Length: 135
Image 1: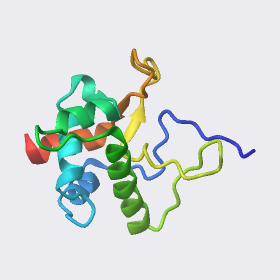
Image 2: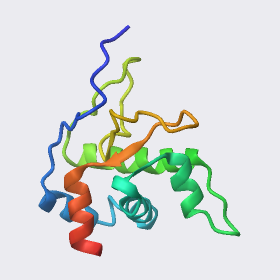
Image 3: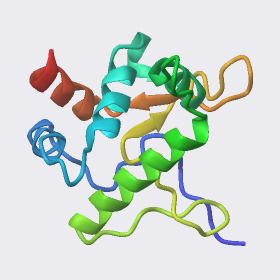
C-alpha cells in the first residue's frame, strides 16, 4: 500500500489570490456550475460545507442534484487546473489522485459533520479571490 499524504493544509500549487482570480475568470477552468459551487461554499459559515449540502443548495424544484455531481464537478475542475500547470495531484492512501483538496481543505477540528460527511473549506486565497471578484 502506498504512503498517504496529509489531507490538511496540503496545497501543492500554493496559488496567490491573484492567481485564483485569473483562474476564476477563465471559463475553460471555472464553468458556470463550478462558479456556482464555489460561490455557494463561500457564503456558508467559515466558507465550509459538505458536498451533500452543496448539492441540496444548488438544486432547483425541477433539477435535484446528487452529491456525486458535486464530486464530479470538483474533479473536473481540479483536473483542468493540474493539467494547465502540468502538475500531478497528490496521492491518497490507495495511490490514486486526490483531487478534492485543490479547491478545498478539510477541516481538522471538524473532519466530518453530524452525518459523517467530510467538511470542505475553501482555501483562504480562493475565498479572498471570490470576495474580490464577486462581492
